[in-house]
Image 1 (cartoon, one colour):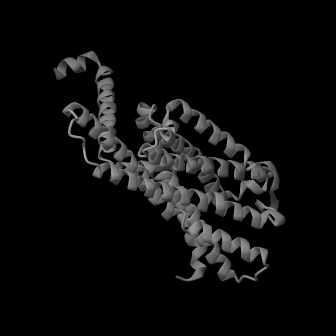
Image 2 (cartoon, rainbow, N blue to C red; image 1 turned 60 degrees about the horizontal axis):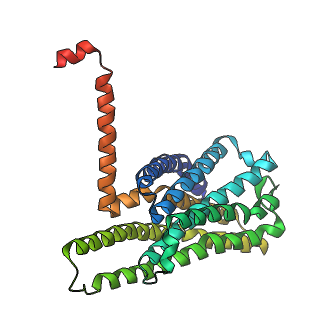
Image 3 (tube, rainbow, N blue to C red; image 1 turned 120 degrees about the vertical axis):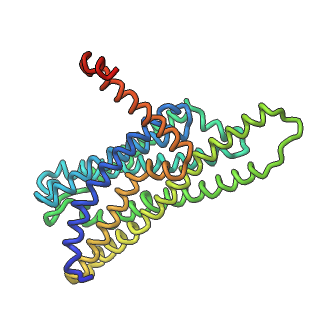
Length: 327
């Protein structure tokens, strides 16, 4: 493909792919909240609800601004305050969503752990505090974005001094830390689940107790499969982003002379990495639907109930004469 086509392809991807991602993503995240709110006493469900809400806010704020920029120009270069706030909220809401999934991974590890003292962290009362602390932390910790983002050379971005530090910060806290902890917790949890599965049953257990034990383990395994699938997608969709941001930051800081073709390729890969991040925010519901049979069953029941209520309301609103003729 000729590099001259890359800017056009980049615009087309943004115009047609991003709206689909936002619409389907927001619908899916709404279903996650509706379905999991029924199990909000479950610690893992609480984290997944938080991630769905933050993913919705993340996409709803940023994708419309990107689409507006394509057609009417970047609005962030017209107001320094808007420039700072947009970057700040983009980062804060994205980070809360990422670390909510990270907490869900840790939660699944704790759930399968043999240490009873560690499992106290899964209590509903403590989970509410953990969620509150995470939300407060990610509103305070990146306050440097509000201070050091500025408008330079007709674009909203980090200042010259802050440029390299900002992208190192993104590499560490957006890519390395969450991905590493997610993968480690996922592997340890999988190991724990295999150990629980292979453990020999005591002879004296009655049938009722055995059935209850199997049911609990199946529910835990179902949540585990959903979280593991989301971790896999997170790692894959964020794979491109750290490499391109480091290449851009290092080459720019070192003053490397770049040709027009090089800049076009660099911009296209960076934009594609950003689209993958939006995709990661939109895909959880569809991931859960594919990997979890109980989740599919619960969604079908909810959808069927909604359809029955809708049809029932329509029948109730029909004129009396029409209903009598139908009878």
